[in-house]
Length: 384
Image 1 (cartoon, helix red, strand yellow):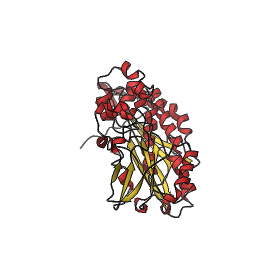
Image 2 (cartoon, helix red, strand yellow):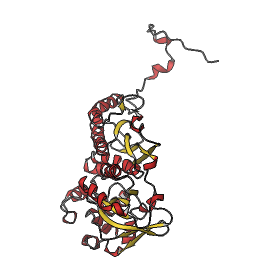
Image 3 (cartoon, helix red, strand yellow):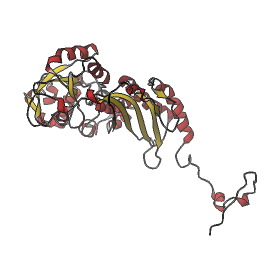
Image 4 (cartoon, one colour):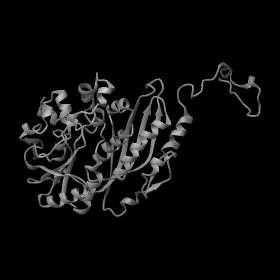
């Protein structure tokens, strides 16, 4: 039977402490985790977090759980909670290369809130997870500042998160991000592919660039083997931007303009596709029923120059490009044809530049392209 060790806190006789305490203690800080720096990081992000708060937020950061009132759903007939989680992927490697860490926080929020928006949901709150090799309060504050910016753009409150230091597992300057968002939608008002009908109109909302997908390919063909000087040089084919600046352009957040349409014109939008990994081809089909196709008229929209720049570097043909990148469309709305003009007016009033890019036709739940060869017609850099 193991002997019990009884210790009196008032007794300083070292002979009564367990024998292993005399062998030289190793503290948590000596193991590489600095809890004091963690506390400083929490202090450093408080202002950024507080500017995202909504009336429904209860409590403050630092508790064991984020608190949010569900009064927001009290007038709904059948409130449905909608959740989404995502990360930023290897775009973070370019942020580290550029020494610019705020915009990836916007990317993180965008990838989550744009996804739940596809149901018509209003984002309510957001939580983040930051895994980092060596915690530095200033660096974390920069990242969280970007997350807070994204939350303000989407109307979601940043009510909690985690900063996890991983010494011995990650290099000191390495970090990774993931996020989790919760929203709510009234079931009768949910967007649903089953509501899509023949003749519905496709309205595209412009992307800001590559957004946050495909960066393993981007880095392989555009940045690997290049010097930082080369990547920071302005490029005429990028409209005067440097490669790094163009690639770090944050993902657009479409919540407020789209939610404005949903509020003002209930039923006008049937379904919605967030164009992420898999490009237009493998995302727009997710907004379709099994008996309808999306007929997309290529050449009716423009794209940021960084997209053909990357496609040229990767030698992608039109077919492969359309199933890899967003190709200039960050979101596509499937709209009742009788409401198209009204939807366009609201989107324009919200600062969007919407474009009619196609229509719904009978089919089998796929994306069909008309004039696919026009994809790079106005972007000669893609053909060099």
